[in-house]
Every structure is written in structure tokens, then in C-alpha cells.
Length: 155
Image (cartoon, rainbow, N blue to C red; front, side):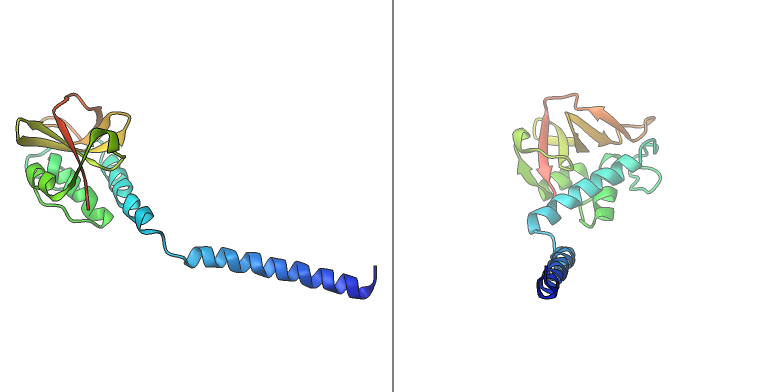
């Protein structure tokens, strides 16, 4: 092997290392795609709601230590960077309505009787929600217990 070949090989290796470094740095500088950023907010809100496990239910409470159902969703999404109206019915009107087959973790689950929305939780996957159920209970993960639900995605 000649010095010239060795030098060429060394430059090629340095060049390759520089390209890999530039590619890695470039990957850090490229912003997330719009869909990825939008998916991150509901998942962050879901994690925030889960972190409130065991917080007592209190009618009208919006956190950070006590919640009612819509107070938990409002608090969780606000901390994740999205604003929601105060009540479950207002939150339903504020979301993009989706089918049960399109639901994803972090979507809102609205319980209704007829046309009246009376409860809301955050979909956790596998037919479960994080929610603040009622007086005397605490924020918890629970199975969806009714077929009377609608789904909404926070915009």
C-alpha cells in the first residue's frame, strides 16, 4: 500500500465521518413534520392526566390538585399547549368529531345521553380512559362502560 493510497483512504474515512456527523446534526435541526407535532400534544396531555392519578374529584375544579371531568381534560391539554373550553359539552363542540375506528390515544371520549354530553375523559387505548368520575372518587384509569360515547380530536 502506498502512502498516497493510505492518504486517500484516510481522507475518505474522514469525509465519511464528517458526512455522518453532518447528517446527525441536520436530523436534530429539522423540525417535526406537522402530523408528528400534532400527535405529540394529545399524547402529552394523556401523560399529564395519568400523572394526576388519585387526585380527588371536586365539582368545578380545574386542578392542579382536584378535578372534575372537564377540568381534568382542560388542565391536561392546557399544560400540553392547547386550549379547551370549560365544560364537557363545550369541549365536544370545540373538537373535530371522529369515528370510533379512527380514535387514537389522547383523543377525548364524550359520554352522552341522547344529544346531551354529560362526561368526558381522555382515551388511553384498549377501550380505557383517564377521567375524574364523580364526587367521592379520584382521577383513575377505567374501561369505557357505555356505548353512548362520541369521540373528538383536539385541533
